[in-house]
Length: 274
Image 1 (cartoon, rainbow, N blue to C red):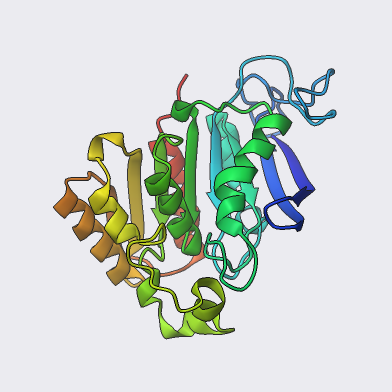
Image 2 (cartoon, rainbow, N blue to C red):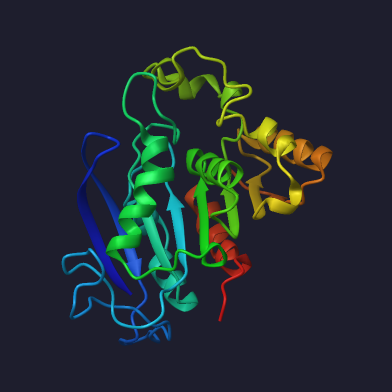
């Protein structure tokens, strides 16, 4: 894998931000086999519009947008799991953006992180790295707040993603546990506005979407997790709407041990072509 920590200016945020990107590399080191995926290194010509940051000649590779949780940043998946090793085995690129404590929302008092992650980020990635823009090659997953973000992207833009996975997702923000309201989270993000009927209302959205148009959905949550009831409510809403969700409610809590195991299963589940 080629690992890049990328710092750039985001127009939608009006400030600089960061992401970590893992790109497959057709090379191997001691104890590891290289990926057979093509398009896995800096190109001689720089790639389209990339100014030298593109990827090698060859077909574009599948990409997983991997989203962080409320207390984390764009480096956390690398620091707490072996995502680089897991992605290498699958020959898939991984994009891990920074969204702070935004709940993947255009904040009432703050920045437009939903616009950033849903609109600007994919454009930046497409013109900078040789990753596929095809729906069948594009996936999203996340944990906790990132699980909410993954399903929010999938339900609001089903035409863009082949699959979406939520690990211990905070899927019903209207019923956030009180301990998550520290720092006036709800007031800063939503400003007291109603969530029902908006892009953040996942339980409502899953009932309003045509099941045939949705990407494949995977839900994983521990039965000892404080967010288990939210996940059960989402599954009930999906069942009522005739939306199939590959779900697994298993022993476990809101821990990295749980998510390290879960992300491996997500990568096995993703319908990666080739």
